[in-house]
Image 1: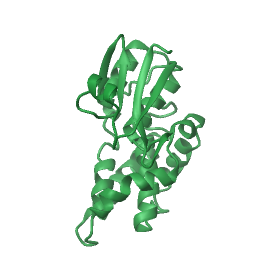
Image 2: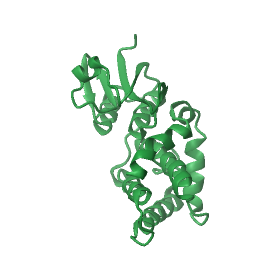
Image 3: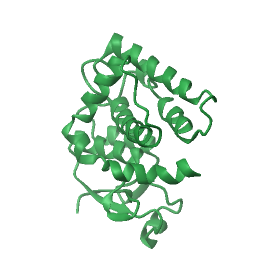
Image 4: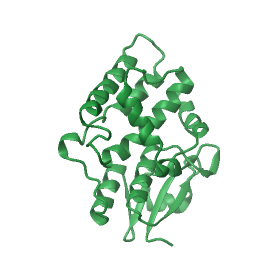
Length: 213
């Protein structure tokens, strides 16, 4: 068994299939890019195994095991992976570390919104426009020619945005945001992204209860 163990979400209704957690995918991508061998445990969040709750009483994913210690929170995990496995370096320059950081929360608010006039769509558009301006000046990745941890964090979130808003609202990133669209295409074309992403139907299944709440 690999020294690193990673617990990630299993798909809703399909406990043997990789689930749709963007934070889990972010950690997986980080391990894959750094070529760190790991053992993956799929956790059915609606029926969590006892051993998992014993090592992780909060019951949240992702959690990772390093040196016989279980650690949660994707920000903390990614930082630790960077420390332990510095090659290739993924730490972003400080000035770009928070680029796109409000897109995911803006997407969730718009996705859950029942009122088309509440401003949630405009807030999301403003965040995507800011990303477009940044990429226009600094692309193709957030920090230029090479991808960093920021891109590995944004890629799964933009995938959820595209799939969920397309399905539940018939909404797509506007054609005018050409740099964002090119960026999304670039990220989604990575072999490692394909390897670590959940199938679209499980992304939809994951968001359905939140949309209908």
